[in-house]
Image (cartoon, rainbow over all chains, first blue to last red; front, side):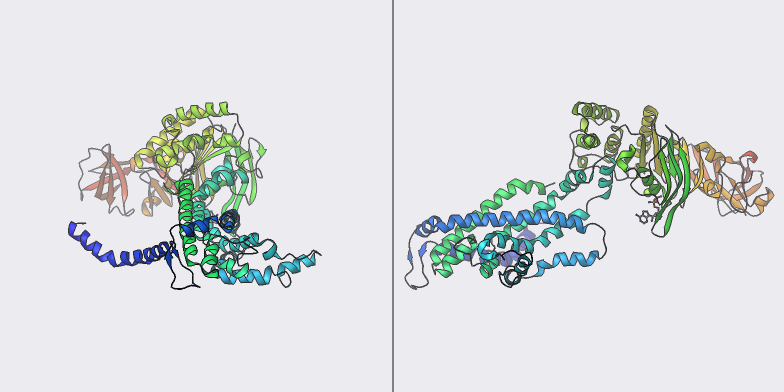
Length: 290
Length: 334
Ligand SMILES: Nc1ncnc2c1ncn2[C@@H]1O[C@H](COP(=O)(O)OP(=O)(O)O)[C@@H](O)[C@H]1O
Ligand SMILES: [Mg+2]
């Protein structure tokens, strides 16, 4: 039915949406790109001038940059590891028939509905606070010195907080994957002499491969840009111990009022995110076809 | 060896008793078919033997040893599922090798068994494919291959052909019978299709609501069904079951006569009626005869070339020695 005429009409019809979307993405990107080549400091308005690659040079040679890259990778990798492994185990548990299954499932899913800032503040003030936190009480109960989590292990603490938020997502996706596993296959494997562990590694895990890929891809996209949790807990510190790339861009442009360097950092972050995305698609994206 | 004995085996799901206490012996090398209508407990019985379900009571013995508490893998039985239950991410070779790998068999012996199974089942050219790339019949053969490489004491089949189309079903039926002739291993085969039961079995077990209605060779069941249920279930088209006047004349509450045991005549006979639909199969014609005063429809087998039309009056005479007589309780009268 797609005649020349109707195809032309279709293009006209969808053009407002496409133009809106393009503008939505291209204008901010273009402006960031433009700012990244300017000397642009909010403390000295009206003095903007073209500086070429200077902003990029300053951003990339800043010692905070390399530590931010490392922190970003640790953050993403740590959360991915905890959520996929934990998610598989949780899903395995939730798939078992048990009393109160519906309620338990809702409880497990619920952290996902809590806003990132709220959950980070809850962790900061109610769990990890060295004086009044639950963990501190626990430590004292066992006669140990309470730990000031956010200043002694800042990055680890943030990994824990973010993993807590994303575990339900991974669990949910993996649980639906478990439920689509043909029970006959498990029974056939049982008759073929496969024990519980063999069944898990030879039958269940390959069945989950696609769902795990989805979890890793989607989470990576969101985890590369974690910000709120860092802002409300450690502010990137102490020093730059918990500063990731997103937070560094924020620090440059809004704490040091240097919009030019911040924009350069933003462009660097976009490029790095694309490299990671290509790398990921190459590595595990093949699980998604067929 | 594969002699399987069920002794008062019972199965309950919660309050529901699916299998009331049941005794059955399956001899070594026998091809036994469990047949019965859908939901009568055939699969459950097979899964009890396999160990995939726990018995609620009674004892299962395999080759004389109590296997009631033995886990499925240790019973030495192999099962072929209706859904084939192939492992989709493994090649055909890996699928067939799986039970051998799980038994830690050495690689050379694995390969030898896989090659020979593939040869028997015509799968040699497909060993490197995934199950998703095979047709239904080929998948079925892979499932059978995975069972035979283990060299089990007995094979369990749960409606293995019901996902195949009619032509393929006939072919696979022959292949499985052929396999049994070759291997001489005990086979237990579950089906709801009495044609499969009649054509394949050494011994048929007819089940209804978990109860064994009759056990016997296909011809035993055909010639002397023990009760009305077996009489109506075995044979195609089904036996004509007649009550009332005609039955009383033969001293029974119900009489049964198969379509092939009624003599047809245009002039005279014991009963008369009007021809309705005729089903022409070429070799035979099945006539539906109405208005006999015996039952709504009496089915008669006539020769393929019979020249009878809708509305013709015909006379029917049952062959006296082929008449089945049943009492009020539904049991066969001697
Ligand atoms: N896991 C189960 N839980 C409860 N009832 C079941 C279960 N499996 C089977 N049944 C019941 O047992 C009866 C026999 O089932 P099944 O053995 O599958 O019948 P068949 O294979 O002869 O069609 C059915 O009424 C079915 O509803
Ligand atoms: Mg069944």
